[in-house]
Length: 457
Image (cartoon, rainbow, N blue to C red):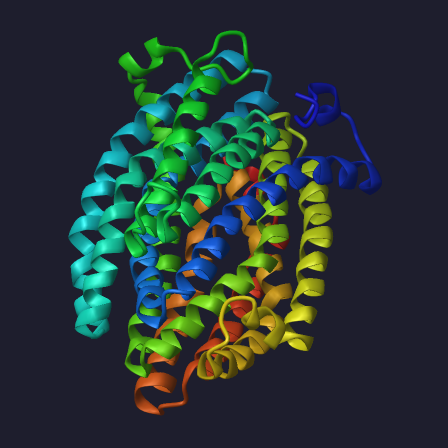
């Protein structure tokens, strides 16, 4: 693949300009893929907002539980990227293919477990949130319907992790583009009806993403199991579990899964805490989070690039290149996020107005989004450097950084300012700013120490 690290390139010294070009070639497909993922969320939020605050609050709560559980079980994709990239960088192509098969095997098992987990956890979260009966019923409908997509999404994210480990960031982009196009069209048709198709409203909003995930599953399976491709997975690898690679994958994936649980768990608790402010505050929370996600795309894409370059360079025993590649990814990714954050500071009402015209939601959301704008540089710094750590196999440090930021700062201080001091949504977002600033400092310190360069998988 042209975007993969060439073996000769991985072993040869290269200056920062060459690394920046390589990092950019790896990152831009991931950035566009993230944009496509976010487009479904944005369209979902915009369309459901037309149905009112209660359905929008339901999407916020039900969707949060869905994504929280899904990304925990899909963390095997993080482990797959690190392990496969290390094998590819070392020139061990057969071991890379075998490890890819073991990752798929884990994904099939974990996807089924995730489906069961969402349906068990969702009612508990809604009761803890103390939402109105109308929001409870609507959230349950949305969450249980979209939960059918969890096994599909876990497989899709794992397949993307395998392909990225091989240095291929373009194929996941093409798959996402196709499946999301179907999802967005289905979203509108199923929510509002068209021709003989009935108006399904919130149920349609939950069903449409599942259809997109199903198409993504079919395309991902075709890519992985076709013969002759670098990332080919053989069916015999699914029938013959390899204890060594499974243990390595679990050792890499479990901290990543716990990190995801800590992060999304903190978001869920935040929503529970904010739930006492009413459906307008929850709606504003959802819109601000959706708007802010537009800025996350560069951080996500360049974190993927840092992960690939770091993993393959360490596999080729070139720690200097791994370090320089991560720095190049940070310079570009954090810079782009800071620029987008500036637009949140200057034009918050423009972004909020894209989703709703309700005065209470616009007023509350604009203040929160302006605060969020100041955090974007810190988010980019955290994402890229923790991405580099994961690519090196240092998933434990990335998890600990998230643990400190979210559960030592975000959750307890949000409880204090919202439930005890009654300061509202803007105060909650100020706490998130402090959380991201702390995590950025910790991620930089861990990266600067260089200890991640000596990790053996």
